[in-house]
Image (cartoon, rainbow over all chains, first blue to last red; front, side):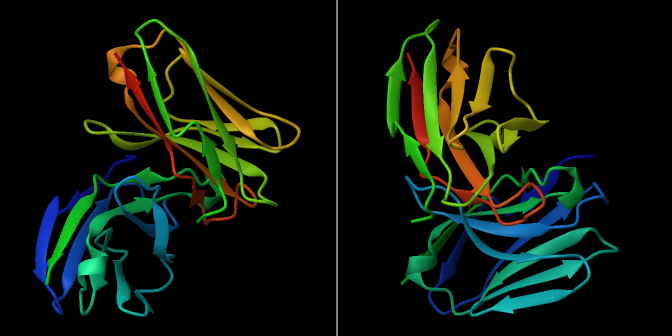
Length: 113
Length: 113
């Protein structure tokens, strides 16, 4: 019940295109869903996050879409740039249970110039 | 730069040995989380401390232990090391356990030979 499944494992997108990464979760107690970006040799950095009371959140070129009934959420990167090439992790946590993050398996994104 | 510091950056040791990884949280953050990142297991939560006390445990082996000191820095102790313990170990911090945003340090890369 703690698993978060992420797809695809890898993604190649042309510069200017839209990158879409999907995640699904089992545990209905999860109430916080962040996305992290990780560059080689660095720690994960928070990109954007959403709570289940909203269906969409947008920050710049990054948008999270959230479907509570389907227990799915996704990250959309608009106008993808070579600098966006990194590994992206979705995660989920339960705020009143310590807030430890359960991560998806990661998606390695490559944006071709 | 997240403001979370971890030392050392790299660590090479032999099987059966013991090592200590150190983490200093962001100024003002009281909660510290430890995560392990490996190729086969992905990013996994190990343990959480809040203001010196253990708050939550995840998939942490009995050979591993941690503590948080009065100055809020934390140490993760790994003993009787095995080849499979080779991984990246991240520390993250947040203001409080129920504060959602966790800021990750740059990690310690442990190689057990």
